[in-house]
Image (cartoon, rainbow, N blue to C red; front, side):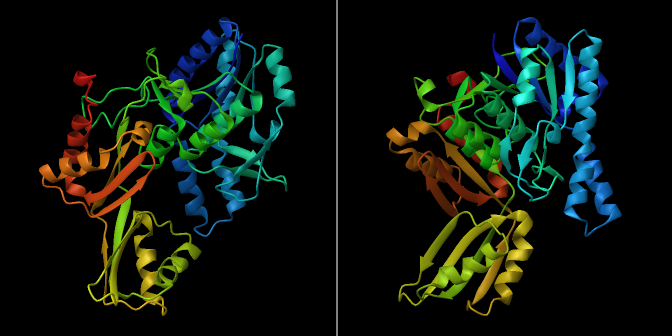
Length: 407
């Protein structure tokens, strides 16, 4: 007998027909003799509607009431799935975040989980009751409902799996697993049987929408085996596991891209000690996340051009902060939203040289200019003009041997 946490996203529970399909999947695990806890998202589109209502009611809303309203979508789904399971002869009961309880801090709208008391839930699981938990929500120390941020149901599921010491956390979604790149761009993209936590973390943070970044980090920290698979087919999914479980590591496992990047260039900045701190300090104080950075110093060493990226949604705020700052002198400020970040990812890069050179040569052969470069131990990212996104992804996917006909 195994203990399994099953998580179903919004598209998987979009209506009663799909909830019945989900109930059948859960029943199969129960009939196989497994203990099952289920985490559900709100029905597709529900959270957006709830957010819109909050903003219409009060543009400058109280974050505590925001959480009260927005968390209600998952409550509906949990109750409906529990009822559907009961109707199919499966003993089931719904759980809200405060009933577990899933304890969080008091940062409403993006709370972080601090502790989960699963004592009562474990008793119910031992009595062969399916526990259906509303994802995305918890309870703060001052007994207010909190939410974990968009995509937080993934985090709820992984956290619950860790607390229950589950054998596996199955994340059901509208794709069949983790692919080498976006199949909508590269038809020859392959589904990966296994991917490491680190690779999945890079993919999630670099634009892959399969799993939420926080959930992957939590799975890695707690050693939770995660499986990503489709709610709509019975094909095997992708296991997200420790690097030691993957015997033969690909040099490159995937190509990711992120369109939500914007580039800022400061031309003619005085090249003096502490200037970078004066530029990036005010941005950090206003919660602007700076990612890729490149600096070009003039021949005489007195001036420098500084280029960096920020989230596209923060471009106006960032330029305003820099323009108002009296601590930084520069000749010109240029902002560009028409860029995309392309990344080559793979744990095998640790032991193989030449990946960067091959990436740069491939882009050069396609006439694609690299604007900014950043690297980590298992990732190389470049910033290019957005118009070359598909060309770059396809070329790199082929040159690194990821196309399905090369498998």
